[in-house]
Amino acid sequence: MANRRQVGVRGTPGDASGMQLDIVIVGLGHQDTTVDIREQLAFAGNGALEAGLRRFATLPGVEEAAIVSTCNRVEIVVCSGEPERAGDSIEGALAEHRGVARQTFAPHLYRLRGREAVRHLFRVASSLDSMIVGEPQILGQLKDSYAASAAAGASGTVLHRCFHSAFAVAKRVRRETAIARKAVSIASAAVELGRSIFDTLDGRSAMVIGAGEMSTLTARHLLANGVRSLLVTNRTFERAVELARECGGTPVPFDQFSRYLHLADLVVGGAGDGDGSHLLTHAMVQQALRSRKQAPMFLIDLAVPRSFAPEINGLDNVYLYDVDDLHQVADTNREERGREAEKAERIVVQAVDRFWRWLEELDVVPVIVALRQKIEAIRTRELARAGATLGSLSSEQRQAVDYLTGAIVNKILHEPVTRLRRRTAGADSHFVRMVCDLFGLEDHGRSDDTEE
Image (cartoon, rainbow, N blue to C red; front, side):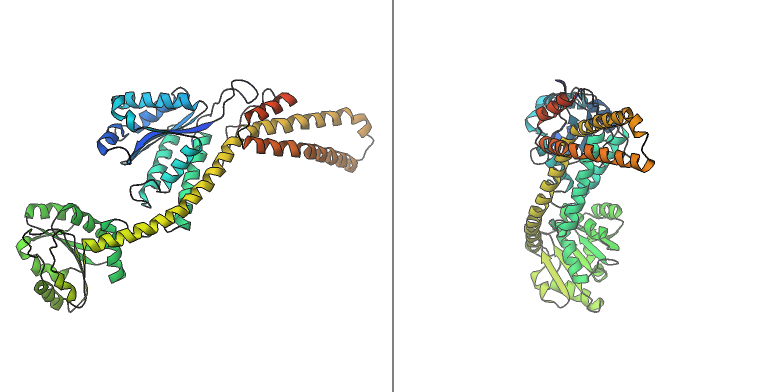
């Protein structure tokens, strides 16, 4: 069981102070803010996350709290019986706690409540709200966020259920849709094409010509997907040495890279001369193929203008792709992800409905328990009063009477309990209060240990 604090909702549905629990999210994300604003509010390092959790969990109107702080978003997720008060408290505390002027970020803040907040959290977990839809990193980040909240004692029954429901939704989206199965970035498209040529990249070798951002990112993707060794060359040799050190590769002098070309199964080029000439020529690749005994080569030209001669593609066992080819692969896959995202959205809607029914029934469960206990107490008391008469009954007959009266109680309660659940699914707190009034359930308490 997760570490949790008491939900601590004051009052009951039977009195004026009773409050319906709600989910509130206050935050900002990559759609509406620049990274310089997000990084000012980020909770990273030096115990900032733990201190923030302690602060937000004790704000007026807040019962439970969690902080989701990544490079793309900063969000405070709370359970509250006073959502407006909680939202106001969070906005003020966010500025004060991070030492940032409120006017710096206030125009970019969003405040979500109720089903909308739950849907947002479920979409975030499922990577439907990410910069690149379907990228898997956010689920792990969300799990870390909840674990930190639980460890700090800032989460309770409701956020426990809400976050774990989000994790379950994300897993179902992965299992039932193809949202993450196609590459949608240039670097990941290069990996996908490489796999289509070599079946697997495990044990392959690569050369990077140029050390720019795109070629570096592509090289790292290739290494992460099984490429064994990396040769790095650049006009500025110091930069080649630096990148080789970062990636565990070997630097090669720029004016001699063609001598090492035959060692590379994959060649990534991101450097161009700018004068229309090509760094990699038909003759260079032809010579490399001879040394490789015609073993296939995969060439990725990321430069604009192109730095690999187009006629290279006419050579047998050579597969040349330029940046437009990679964009086309990524765009096609992005469209496919869009179609899969529609399926994922339907899964999210179903999950929101299930969670919301659970949350709305949270207040009525103690009422139902109290009602059953009260009627059962009456049954038990009346059986005891009839003890003199029952004394002449055999043990089997006593059991039969006990079973009969218990069955009558259950049948009488079945319809009221069913209607209680249905009416509270529509958030009809007046109906709950009426039932409490009618049966004298002034103090039915609240269960703080509701589990999934």
